[in-house]
Image 1: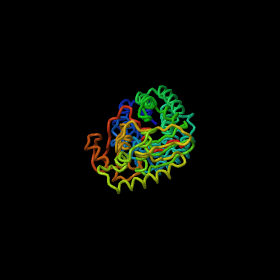
Image 2 (image 1 turned 60 degrees about the vertical axis):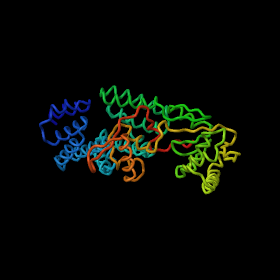
Image 3 (image 1 turned 135 degrees about the vertical axis):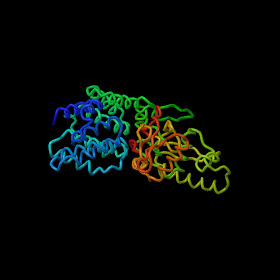
Image 4 (image 1 turned 90 degrees about the vertical axis):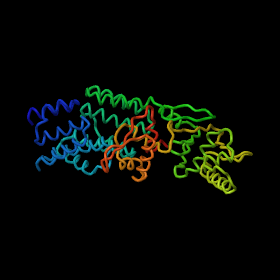
Amino acid sequence: MDSLITAAARALSVGDPLGALNQIALRDDAPALALRGIAMAQLGDLDRAKALLKRAARAFGPKEAVARARCVVAEAEIALVSRDLSWPTKALDRAQATLEAHGDRVNAAYARYLGGRRLLLIGRLDEAESLLLGLDPTPFLPALAAAYELVLAGIAIRRLKTEAAHCALVRAGTAARRAGIPALMAEVESAVLVLKAPAARLLARGEERPLLLDEVEALLASDVLIVDACRNVVRGTGMVVSLATRPVLFALLRALAEAWPGDVSRSALLARAFRAKEVDESHRARLRVEIGRLRAEVRALAEVSATKQGFALIPHRNGEVVVLAPPVEEEHATVLALLADGEAWSSSALALALGTSQRTVQRTLDVLAADGKVQSFGRARARRWMTPPVPGFPTSLLLPAPLPNG
């Protein structure tokens, strides 16, 4: 490797893409193409970066398997940053295997880290955690160590393990300062703010207050009966009953929980659950049926008792009843939660992360665009959607991942 390539690689390792380009901007040999691609990625020109890396991979000869594998890893990172979550992960797996076989453990570890980061984005926390905890971060360069700790913090935040998240962010901050890369330090600082921002609202006895992540964690560990509107479940001591596929039942339960220890009139329940403007006997009959179904679902945690005016929720053991709700509630909150990271997402990536159809996501994006809440750029497959980050937006609770079952 010649001196210019070495100097460019060193500049890229400390986050100085312009310094790297000063060394190799006019060169078209394979190593220079690869480094130019990485530099353009650091500058944010992802399309140009992808094109340069593909050229570099083709330019490396058949005996340069390690170099080609490194190009694939760089392409995978660009796909991740541009939220192209449909990028072929098997290519990354093959590149990782090639790097491990040739003793390039650092880049093999980086490939594995990228796989874990992708799994985190689409909410597959168990797989992400299993993949990353198998890594030994000791030989990592500071920049990679910081990125690794950031993903571990993301998993801990999504699992509402605030102490583990805080420790990971402290380690990430230390590694980022050692790396001396301003963008990386800013990313760590942004992640720290998540722990200090409101993550949910607590509704109890007619009052409402915001909760931080550690307060949510403490609430879920308590003996309180929690009607969790973040996941449409009801939680009691050691038990979780999901109503995620029963929206009418959950709407009735939430209305009863918000009114606790009082009751809710039948007309109010009809308006809340069925959106009935004019009530007739068929609505009343349906309410009786749905209340019966709700009783059957939550019988292990509480009773739904008829009163003179309507119905009331009575928890077992005479415990408290609270509602845990997202700070931002609207019909398309989960899509906004993903877009709140400030990155540009494709509709296919959003559909993959949310576990729904691309057509459903596209309809949602059209509605949000009409309301001025999101914007798009590009056309056809290159079309991307984004929105400026919303201060304090509770992405950790709205993103598609299960909360603790305790």
